[in-house]
Amino acid sequence: MYNHIERVGFVGLGAMGSGIARRLMDAGHTVVGWNRTRSKAQDLIDAGMGWADTPREVAEQCNVVLTMLTNTAAIEGAAHGDDGLLAGLGAGQVWADLSTIAPERSVALSEEVAATGARYLDTPVSGSPATLAAGQMSVMVGGERSAYDHVEKLLHAIGPKVTYIGPNGHAILTKVAINLSLVVSVTAFAEAVTLVEKAGVDRAAVVDAALKSVIASPVIGYRAPLLVDDDTVFADVELQQKDLVLAQELGRTLGVMLPTCSAASEMLSAARSSELADRDFLVSVADVYRRAAGVEVR
Image 1 (cartoon, one colour):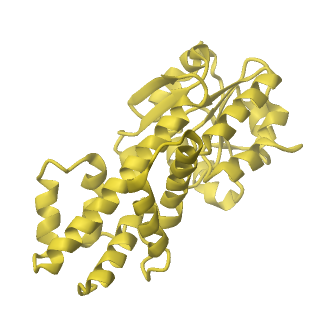
Image 2 (cartoon, rainbow, N blue to C red):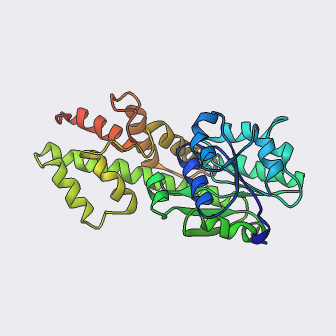
Image 3 (cartoon, helix red, strand yellow):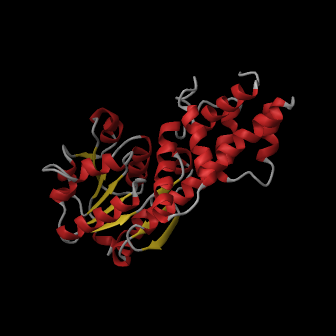
């Protein structure tokens, strides 16, 4: 069971991945990592993380492998080929993917992993680097229950809220739904603030009132201040629109209407041309609303 996890592999050491890897190291785990750009992992290497030259080497050295990459293509790239994870996995190992990727590809990967004798879990996370640092990250898990039992305590080192959803694919489907709700609600918040700002209400006062109201969800709580004087970027337009595209593709496949998803995606498309497109997507979308409404942009 859990006590036999000797080494944890980590593939994908960007902002979120490096934060998770550091939490695992701080919890006493031996971590071996790989990232396409080694320099981005140098702080972790200096702190004692082992380094592997390829994803395959990570799998060969570790009995549990975690991945956190940007999109489906990045996961596919890390999985396949002579230097990919699948070439290094074998019986008794578990690969838990923390990324948000296309649900059908996640299920296909679980089948490819099973052919190696290893087991695959879709384990997408919900939160931001800020919630991770605060110890409030949540993790959803899809896959064999026995594989989940094997890594459950390890996942609790990432965040305290770990939920087993069901078979392979069910956790990533749940994450797509959560991200749909997140983007729609944040976009609606930008719209609402613009509405009353146009009427002459001070933007900072609106944000302050919202943070004291019933709409002050965790995501509004840490994002609303971005409209006032905070340059933090939790996720830009491109990253968040990727999540909406996954939802739209799923909706088309299942024949489910997603009108608010479509409306939010249109706003994100417009925000790609914003002068603030490199900021958090809330700021980018709010900039589009303000310019369209004739509100002074500050």
